[in-house]
Length: 130
Image 1 (cartoon, helix red, strand yellow):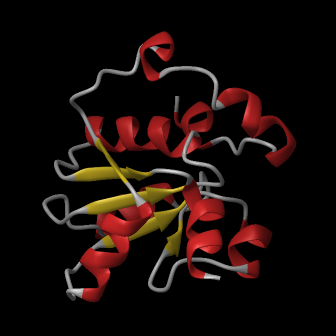
Image 2: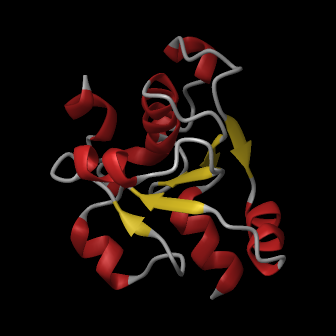
Image 3: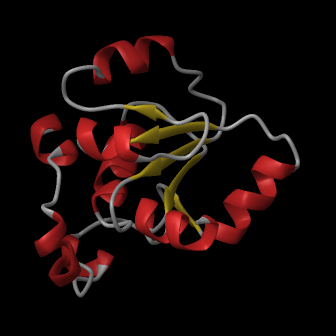
């Protein structure tokens, strides 16, 4: 399950997956919330302590990421979960906001209560802040 949840979507194919609704994927609507770029930016500017994880591949993360974000993948998910605060807000970031939804669902099942998927992913964040 973990490998499936955190498998990276090739950028060329992510756009086609954006057409698939969460309902069609069988993802319940109540386990995590969608956070848009403006809301995230406002929360960060207000100094809210957010845990931000980026599930993109290491090379993409190195090319650019949200300040304070930690890259999390199959190689370090167990370490992240052992050190994370399950009660603090957690924002999951991927390329386009699709893969992060599955990861957010998985992390909710692992005990994270206040969890968000970033709408549009890092691509939208970079476009709005670049």
